[in-house]
Image (cartoon, rainbow, N blue to C red; front, side):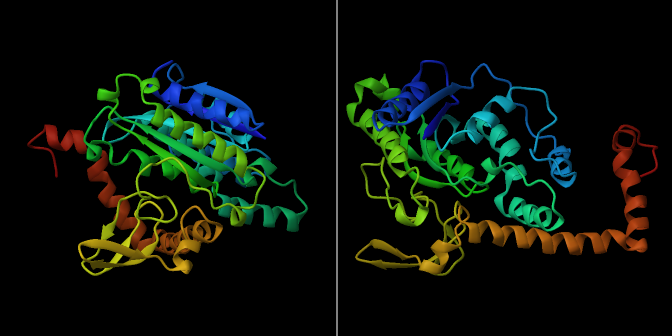
Length: 329
């Protein structure tokens, strides 16, 4: 089993140290480990050029990005791993942008539902199937690192990291919210924190090879687990009723309050459709397919096409219009 650790923080600083502590523990459990720091890497944002989709539609075995930067190093390392531990800093409430760039490039183009459907078409036509690494079940763990002593200043750190689970249908076995680094001074001075980081590596290593249904490990946080039973994050969407939603996993529960203590009941059918499950990813896939049909129908209408053409002229001439009072608006 191979476990990949990625740090999106400064070299030999907090993110590196915590991820490496997790990897030390994973290695002690018999895992082969690899560590990558991305600080010196160039990972550009997705250009939405559809090159990756065209690779798939042309029958390529591997789905590649056309941008020439260091993304491909991370992509290959990820595809070759069985589990992943990511540490990333929080600079302004949410995770550093380089992580999001990597996720946007890797995850949507490897959406498991769309790739499973593509493989069905290829199998029926007798064509080469997609790279089998795209369908490997992996376990994950996350470390959000922030300097603030006030937890709400790092509130979007862990929820953003959990977004990495969805497209590949990964199962997370733990996370650590390593805030308060401004007063910790150095992570190795906080032995409890380092112990929690080590527990992440151990949990990932012990989970690899087991079916998701046989793994109920959750480690990393000393406090009461978060409100969502899937991602264990504490955020909730409210809709004015006692129904609440986890905005990370997209599942609904029923909230009740007794003696100022909040309890949320999460139905099993909701947990089964969380975004990091095959049912959840197919739910989104089917939604997109239905939207495509509606969109194509609207764009194919000659009246709509002519109206769009006329309206677009204004937007294409935006600079000309706003810079000249006499320009035709």
